[in-house]
Length: 54
Image (cartoon, rainbow, N blue to C red):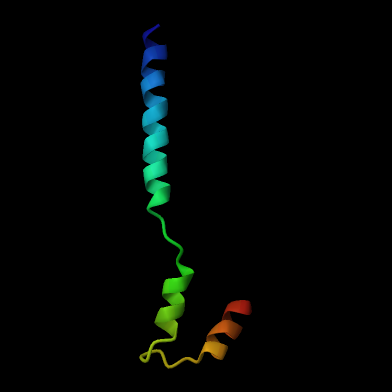
């Protein structure tokens, strides 16, 4: 069946594309913490940590 041949090519392609997408994702929290603690936001580390726990 020609349908089976197309599916065998589709599976590895989908797997590789999924891996490429998810490997490029980065955690957001370290960047937002550094942004909030910067001089323009004027937050202390205690204020930032207490707002995350609420």
